[in-house]
View 1 (tube, rainbow, N blue to C red):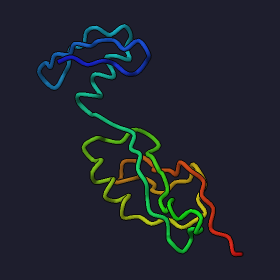
View 2 (cartoon, helix red, strand yellow; view 1 turned 135 degrees about the horizontal axis):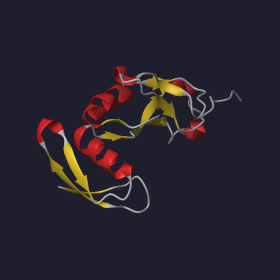
View 3 (tube, helix red, strand yellow; view 1 turned 90 degrees about the horizontal axis):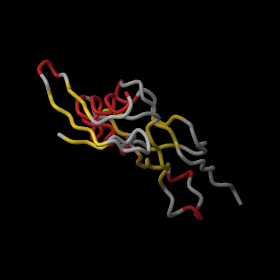
Length: 128
Protein backbone atom coordinates (compact mmCIF):
# COMPACT_ATOMS: atom_id res chain seq x y z
CA UNK A 1 0.00 0.00 0.00
CA UNK A 2 1.21 3.51 -0.73
CA UNK A 3 0.49 6.72 1.18
CA UNK A 4 1.71 10.28 1.00
CA UNK A 5 2.64 11.61 4.42
CA UNK A 6 0.89 14.89 5.24
CA UNK A 7 2.61 15.76 8.51
CA UNK A 8 5.05 18.22 6.89
CA UNK A 9 5.52 19.95 3.52
CA UNK A 10 7.97 17.32 2.18
CA UNK A 11 5.14 14.85 1.45
CA UNK A 12 7.15 11.65 1.60
CA UNK A 13 5.84 8.77 -0.52
CA UNK A 14 5.44 5.93 1.96
CA UNK A 15 5.29 2.26 1.13
CA UNK A 16 3.55 0.23 3.81
CA UNK A 17 3.42 -3.54 4.20
CA UNK A 18 1.19 -5.18 6.77
CA UNK A 19 3.03 -7.77 8.87
CA UNK A 20 1.67 -10.26 11.36
CA UNK A 21 0.26 -9.16 14.71
CA UNK A 22 -1.10 -5.88 13.28
CA UNK A 23 2.42 -4.48 12.71
CA UNK A 24 3.51 -2.43 9.73
CA UNK A 25 6.75 -2.09 7.79
CA UNK A 26 7.04 1.51 6.59
CA UNK A 27 9.61 2.76 4.09
CA UNK A 28 10.11 5.98 2.15
CA UNK A 29 9.82 8.26 5.16
CA UNK A 30 12.56 10.81 5.76
CA UNK A 31 11.72 11.26 9.44
CA UNK A 32 10.00 9.32 12.26
CA UNK A 33 6.78 11.31 11.73
CA UNK A 34 6.15 9.41 8.50
CA UNK A 35 6.13 6.07 10.26
CA UNK A 36 3.84 7.43 12.99
CA UNK A 37 1.51 8.88 10.33
CA UNK A 38 1.28 5.52 8.51
CA UNK A 39 0.47 3.64 11.73
CA UNK A 40 -2.21 6.15 12.70
CA UNK A 41 -3.74 6.40 9.25
CA UNK A 42 -4.00 2.65 8.73
CA UNK A 43 -4.67 1.36 12.24
CA UNK A 44 -6.46 4.24 14.04
CA UNK A 45 -7.48 6.92 11.52
CA UNK A 46 -8.63 10.26 12.94
CA UNK A 47 -9.97 13.49 11.46
CA UNK A 48 -10.75 16.99 12.71
CA UNK A 49 -14.54 17.31 12.37
CA UNK A 50 -16.09 20.63 11.30
CA UNK A 51 -19.86 21.18 11.16
CA UNK A 52 -22.57 23.50 12.47
CA UNK A 53 -25.10 23.31 15.29
CA UNK A 54 -28.48 25.01 15.54
CA UNK A 55 -28.87 28.29 17.39
CA UNK A 56 -31.98 28.83 19.51
CA UNK A 57 -34.26 30.85 17.22
CA UNK A 58 -35.35 33.15 20.06
CA UNK A 59 -31.73 34.30 20.36
CA UNK A 60 -31.20 35.10 16.69
CA UNK A 61 -31.16 38.73 15.58
CA UNK A 62 -33.38 39.12 12.48
CA UNK A 63 -30.37 40.57 10.63
CA UNK A 64 -28.67 37.19 11.15
CA UNK A 65 -31.59 35.22 9.73
CA UNK A 66 -29.33 33.46 7.24
CA UNK A 67 -26.87 32.53 10.00
CA UNK A 68 -29.04 30.43 12.28
CA UNK A 69 -26.22 27.94 12.80
CA UNK A 70 -23.00 28.10 14.77
CA UNK A 71 -19.82 26.70 13.19
CA UNK A 72 -17.99 24.22 15.43
CA UNK A 73 -15.05 21.83 15.23
CA UNK A 74 -13.37 19.17 17.31
CA UNK A 75 -10.46 20.39 19.40
CA UNK A 76 -8.32 17.43 18.25
CA UNK A 77 -8.64 14.75 15.57
CA UNK A 78 -11.57 12.43 16.28
CA UNK A 79 -11.72 8.65 15.61
CA UNK A 80 -12.86 8.32 11.99
CA UNK A 81 -15.18 5.35 12.55
CA UNK A 82 -17.17 7.35 15.16
CA UNK A 83 -17.67 10.52 13.09
CA UNK A 84 -21.24 9.65 11.94
CA UNK A 85 -22.22 9.10 15.59
CA UNK A 86 -20.67 12.46 16.57
CA UNK A 87 -22.41 14.30 13.73
CA UNK A 88 -25.76 12.83 14.76
CA UNK A 89 -25.27 14.14 18.29
CA UNK A 90 -24.06 17.57 17.16
CA UNK A 91 -26.94 18.02 14.70
CA UNK A 92 -29.42 17.30 17.51
CA UNK A 93 -28.00 20.12 19.68
CA UNK A 94 -29.36 23.64 19.96
CA UNK A 95 -27.18 26.30 21.57
CA UNK A 96 -28.20 29.48 23.35
CA UNK A 97 -26.49 32.75 22.60
CA UNK A 98 -24.17 34.47 23.30
CA UNK A 99 -21.39 32.09 22.33
CA UNK A 100 -17.73 33.05 22.22
CA UNK A 101 -15.22 31.57 19.83
CA UNK A 102 -13.39 28.73 21.59
CA UNK A 103 -16.27 27.96 23.99
CA UNK A 104 -16.95 24.26 24.42
CA UNK A 105 -20.26 23.25 22.86
CA UNK A 106 -19.85 19.57 23.70
CA UNK A 107 -17.31 18.32 26.24
CA UNK A 108 -15.87 14.80 26.18
CA UNK A 109 -17.73 13.95 22.98
CA UNK A 110 -18.94 10.34 23.08
CA UNK A 111 -16.57 9.63 25.98
CA UNK A 112 -13.45 10.19 23.85
CA UNK A 113 -12.04 13.07 25.92
CA UNK A 114 -12.25 15.28 22.83
CA UNK A 115 -14.16 18.56 23.09
CA UNK A 116 -16.17 20.30 20.37
CA UNK A 117 -15.77 24.08 20.34
CA UNK A 118 -17.32 27.10 18.66
CA UNK A 119 -15.26 28.63 15.87
CA UNK A 120 -17.14 31.93 15.81
CA UNK A 121 -18.41 34.47 18.34
CA UNK A 122 -22.12 35.22 17.96
CA UNK A 123 -23.95 37.66 20.22
CA UNK A 124 -27.55 37.50 21.35
CA UNK A 125 -30.04 39.77 19.57
CA UNK A 126 -30.42 43.18 21.12
CA UNK A 127 -33.74 44.80 22.01
CA UNK A 128 -34.58 47.92 19.98
